[in-house]
Image 1 (tube, rainbow, N blue to C red):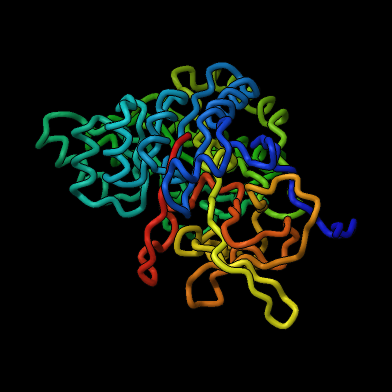
Image 2: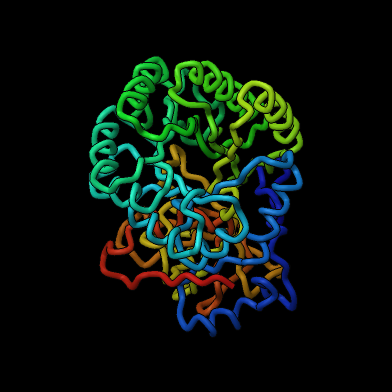
Length: 413
């Protein structure tokens, strides 16, 4: 069976090699990896791909641009430990993530803490650890001032700005219009005055307009607007800007018809912004914060076929994992119209005999759908279904307690 030429297809998943019909994860055949893990389903993350992605990005961007890993994308301690040795800093969104980042050996001076609802105890932990707190409300100023006095050390702060624009073409808009994130740009001058009056250690700004964008021109435009906004706000700051986080938004191709992001114009744009920064905010370091872009393509979700059944002409592969482990692949994590992740039968790579099937999980809900009428090699019970692009927002973003099935295992290979 061949795919009709008019149907959009997935971008080639060439990051994982194959040999003798087996998908390879960092050189290890999938069936052997499954035996090593001891169970299905599981997530596997390829450390060689993680390392290569960071190196690729550094080569495409100007020297001096700092790279931060937003660990909410994948907080597995083994992954965070690897990333801490590859990037310049870690961005966390809770005290739980802060603990993982500190345990990984990340430099506290290069850890930043964001989130719209930081509890007082979390702010106290952040100040004690010496990490940078991204302020997202006026309330946090008073709390941090009290904590600074109690601990005898000044809280390090940056202002997360809710800009007056959105990142065009982003999968999830994090700024512009009314938002729970950050402080509205028009209120930031007042906030900066209060930071100075409270005696907190101001260091800079954090702007994050949106995520999962595959259009380089949109990312460049957002970076330019973010830089211009930060430059204007710097005139109201109680101290020189030392930290300027321009966010991320770099996307990866998940669905049919999507193409990989072109880094060339982004690198050129950041080069221009770096030159302007050296002239107009000479103490500031430019930071790019990425999560999904670093880890998404380096991970796979592996689940085993339990049953094969035909219902009124439609073939179903029933597997031992589903939306409880991989909510985003089921289409229930932000998709408006459900689309298939790229998939394969990992122990039948290169097989010529294909069929159109739906891959469903073991849960008693019609939402438990991992692939809908997708062309795949003919599979039987015992075969291994692989979902690509699964290194980000997988296990930690899924309702693993739903219906009481076993939790998923994660491995760094």
